[in-house]
Structure formats: structure tokens, C-alpha cells
Image (cartoon, rainbow, N blue to C red; front, side, top):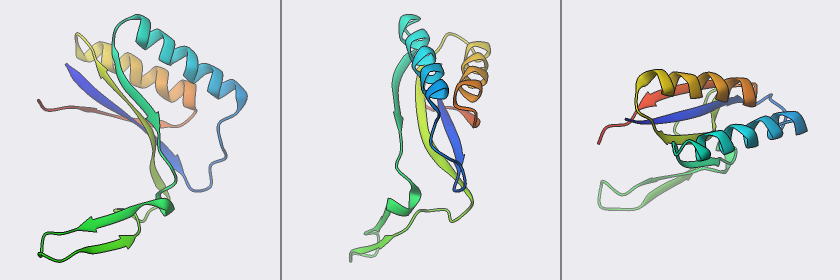
Length: 109
């Protein structure tokens, strides 16, 4: 079962502390050693996003994010786990390590 765990940040949130980075590194190591982590990364601030729309046959781009809210995805993990309980475990550990909310969503395919 594959899941994506989105780290949810706020525009007012400060960068991760040294302790948070150590906890995130430890969680990454745990996921890696268990053979569950497929990919993980952080994301730049949404103000650095570009939206592309080529559906109309002409190029339409804008410097913006899809959502203009006070919260945004600042990183994610993609995991392959044997069951939903393990995915829930990593979502809890991810929230604790990052000191941010985490959205867990099962992947299709």
C-alpha cells in the first residue's frame, strides 16, 4: 500500500529547529531501514510556484500557487507500507518530528 504524507506548514511558521531536523532525520532513517520510504523531500514556499495552463492551445503561466491560503504543503514522504496501521504510525511520527500537521493520503495505482 502506497501513501503520501504531506507536511502542512503556515506562512507564519519559522524554519525547523535543530531538534526538529534531528527528529526528521531519525524518522527518515527509520523509514529507510524498514524498507518503507520510497521518496521524501521538502518544498519551497508557494510564493515561488508557477502555474502552467496549456489546455486552451496557448501558453498561460502565472507566478502563483494553486491555493492562496495561510497553510501549504512544505514537504512530503512517499511510503510503501504493508497496512494502514503502519501508514498511521508514520503520519503520527511525522507530525511529532516536524511539529506540524501531516495529511495522510493513500495513493492510487
